[in-house]
Image (cartoon, rainbow, N blue to C red):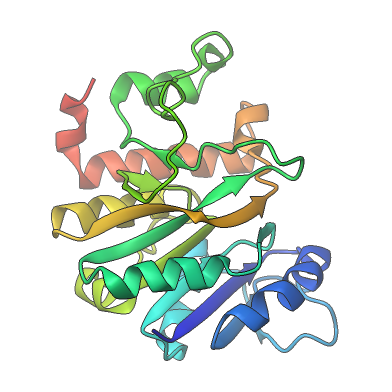
Length: 246
């Protein structure tokens, strides 16, 4: 299975410079998008946007220019261990209905990062997006009370920082919804994949170190938190049946 990797950088030149030497040997094609000036080191070949685009729009742009049977969406701060991409692509190749394959993610200090999650509910979203999250940790949403899987397991959705996506599935779904500027496009894609009968698999043999700044968890009112709420509202408008999931 030929893998095309897409890295979208929004001012993350140093992270891109550290990521590409590790990522490039693991993929068949590599596309880098510089969303704003100063997003990549001078020696890195990239597509430079004349004006910034939303994350989903950037992924669709690179998808149209790539040729792999599988598309690897990679954040600049997500660095794969050796063999991580092969573990994901090998699993996807062996499971024809696997539309999304995600790795085991850890923080830079090696501690587990809860990248495998349940689809959002109304009460859970309110807790996670308000100060209530400091006293209600949403353990069920993050699978925190379950043993860490040692073998691949199906998931509702996985964090979009490092995901392998089958092109056939993306073509069927029409790619990412570009009306999500930032945040929520990964949940929306995997929810639509679920409804279309595509499986989403968590593959713990693939290891990725992900910084995951989680800026919207640390600040209540910034441009990014507004984008996050806009993504939540967009998701609910598209999938009103999720309002029944309390």
